[in-house]
Length: 172
Image (cartoon, rainbow, N blue to C red; front, side, top):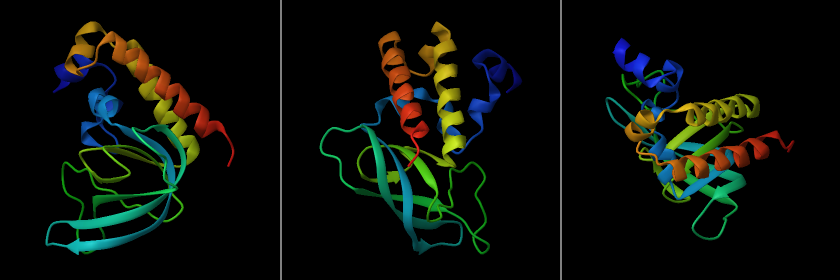
């Protein structure tokens, strides 16, 4: 494991909101990307090992979409609470009303995973997106290959991270 971390760079990229977070292609291939604020959330189903939850998100900014931009989106995700402990290996989230999210997904009505979700304050998200941009810009050709990213993909994704950063800097 140590060798893997040394070969592939900053270990912080491997441990975040999403275990698959170091795979840049998950973010690159997501047809929908937006910043929003959780409006409401509810539990859909409780099992012995998992909580299936759904959140309604007020969309603040759309960075990528194949169609029109709706005012709201919904996401289903795995969660946890005091009765249902967090699973090893995640990803699981606790999305409370008012929290800001960045969502890379297949649609505006998606399940996470297979998408990618980052939550936190605007400042936390800005730092996270800048770290992703910086890590991507520093990837060696071998790291790009592992992440299934081409040089063209890198340019597109860095531009997208710049757009997200600009949106996060705007006071709303």
